[in-house]
Image 1: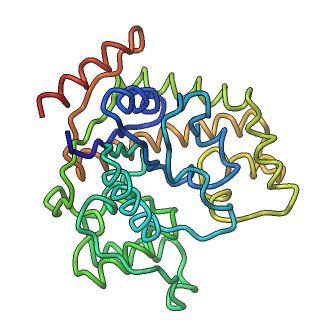
Image 2: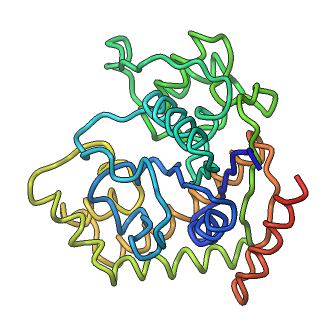
Length: 293
């Protein structure tokens, strides 16, 4: 098999475990496609794979940047394509794993990106004004209105390419790839997300964030990423610990909903139900699909 495998879906559906099993079966190596996991030290809040969980499988584009370093979709596209080539040159299968849909599209589709500069013309615009400006160009775009960098990126991309950064499924795919999505009932997913957040708190998320907070670090990954921005607000004294935990859960659930919207509109995904009682059943279903393609 010479295809690239892409494992995606919302948080807490089993992407990490599935990717490890597929890497073992198909002689694969794993490339991260999570925008937060590229940063060093953002481990608990991003549910980054542990060394034990890797089971000796090589992983790339994990913990490659400090939190004060700039890393955009342009950089990811370049880095991911380089890793794909390196892995294929070794005769192995690249397995891209993560829930950042724009990273996946940028790497695998014919997206012409330029190194981003947040132009002076946007400095005086609020996020709401940027969103209005974007929707005047691209009325059907699906985007997080509060993500300033993504709004600017989408405006620049439309101006440079005369098309949406995430228009539809008709963009040209540059690689032979299989897109595999893990999913589950929405209420089950939300319960899994809530439990995962409780586990993150138990495992030391607050201390992880406090190590940056105490140094006065206030960079975009920490102030924008779910699980980090809420802890910052708590440490600032703006919300209670209970409110912080509930906000992380709520924002994570909302993000999962947005992920589904993006995946279903932008990627040609074959969806598989996660069998939480016996995950081997899910693995076998996915392997059967891969083997038949």
